Image 1 (cartoon, rainbow, N blue to C red):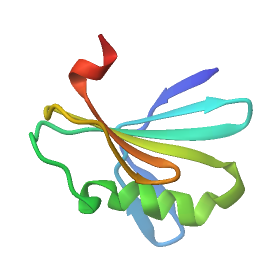
Image 2 (image 1 turned 60 degrees about the vertical axis):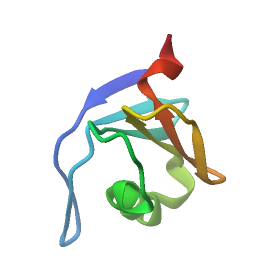
Image 3 (image 1 turned 180 degrees about the horizontal axis):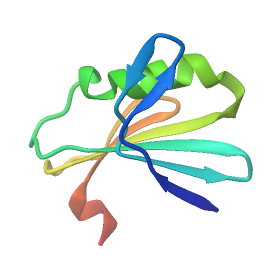
Length: 86
């Protein structure tokens, strides 16, 4: 596993801000951390752009937030409360 902290990614003319990217066996997991108690698809916008550009290398996107419910937005997009980790 190769963890990486990446704040800004340039893909062509797009500039994406993603908090963390993990590479495991050649697949990428994008992670965002939000201080909000609510979550929306808009919180995943940079992760969706990354997915569109990386396609087969992209594995999943995760947004950690301060709410209390785990939410599956798509087959590979998840919102998880901080409490989920412990």
